[in-house]
Length: 218
Image (cartoon, rainbow, N blue to C red; front, side, top):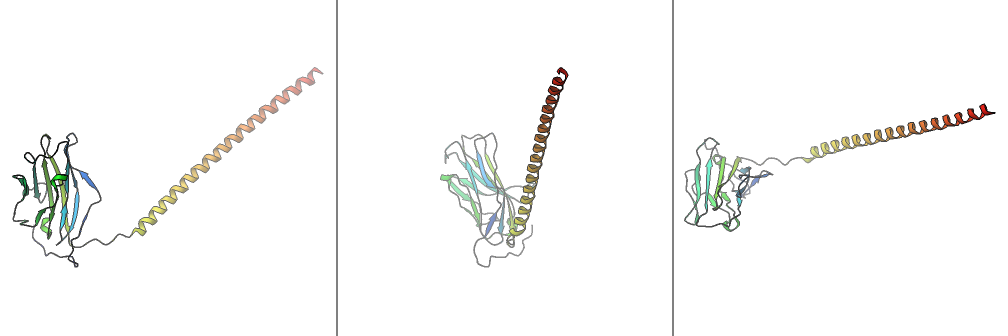
């Protein structure tokens, strides 16, 4: 991937925006769970935080715990390790890609393994893997994050259309429900009228039968 010209935020402040949904990347049968954002978008030239936290049934034991952060351009590319947990401490590895732009931004006491990448570049796009091992958990945890780098922030969304569409759909649903209620009421009234007419006819038939019998007797 060739390096493109980078642009910076005019205010010189960090700007990141992530997807609305968080997903769990973990085995459904293990007690280890890794929580990451499935997709993160970062503004070129700013600092982005890539979060990775985990839950475990066991307390973190520094002597047995291990953690690795790796990068790969695509799912088929070889993973490149750029941060690890070695000799009871976090060790950022100075790679040709990141050099010293990656920092540990988590807290082991809170099972937080998050990192930050400063001066984000277009070549930083790719897949970031957060690996966790916390014995006696038998299954290792893994979080996969797709990072996309953009050169400008998207324009704010105009909610007017969405509101109008929502109002239209709501109005249509209200009309449908009202129509169904009216039809049901009309059918019920017709049924009641038919029952009343049948009852009247039965009563008139009984009355006529009684009268005919009396005339025959006389």
